[in-house]
Length: 343
Image (cartoon, rainbow, N blue to C red; front, side):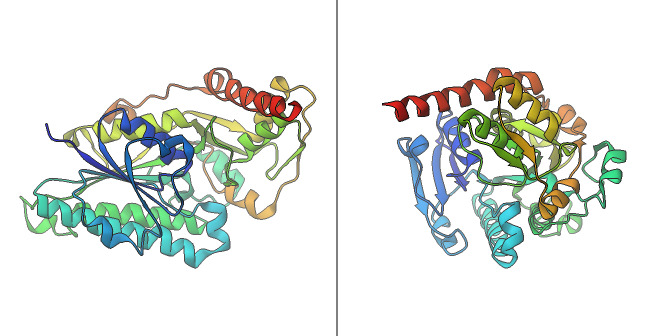
């Protein structure tokens, strides 16, 4: 079997680094794209890197015949609210350019190009916390009224992906349409990696307080103690992308899936931090803007469809996440940092 070619945009991000490491074990020819040079974690891997603005460098990607595209590059929620026009350019224009590329290659190569798109719980939008609490576990078709530019971008890109995977909306005209791109999206909860430092995302308050506690630094949480959303360990996020990539098209009843692992309040994160690091100085100082954003996101989501269609199940529940994954790694990180400081 000939070597398959994979494109990973946003390869230098938290998801990108972990995904590239997993893909290299499968023997793919991997092309990475990012504004930044490759970080040390994946720099030594056998990948071909294209550095620069994706929108401006899209023509270079037409020289490749990709079998699979993972489009991870994005302007995330907090940054997108500050620079909305730039966020739209990156999140929407960049995605549309890649969808056009995938559609073109699908037609040219006479085979479907898989397009894996990480969406977000930011596509949901509740008017207040009472409505959010009453909704419980939210299905994919409910409350699609995002409050942020990032959420609007992600929801629109989902719709674009479905549109282009229906051969530009012409499927209803042809019962046997030409080969089309194969668009698949996952709406991720707040993702937490044990191996990278939080980058200031709107859902990063949980890992931020644990990193601060491990480092012996005070932390003022930007949402209140009762704030609840769903979270997931990074290995489960990578697992889900690979599972959805591998799933036969005929088994999929949707192109957009919720997935879930565990749901926590900010106060419960604080209790975990205090248990692991007695004496940690963690207070709550809600930022009205960021509090409003998190309050618009679901407490948890219904992922029954992913479980049914492609056997989704997380490896890390709440206890496994803290005890077997996150806490051991950040303790090692800060013990090493303390040792270096003493030396």
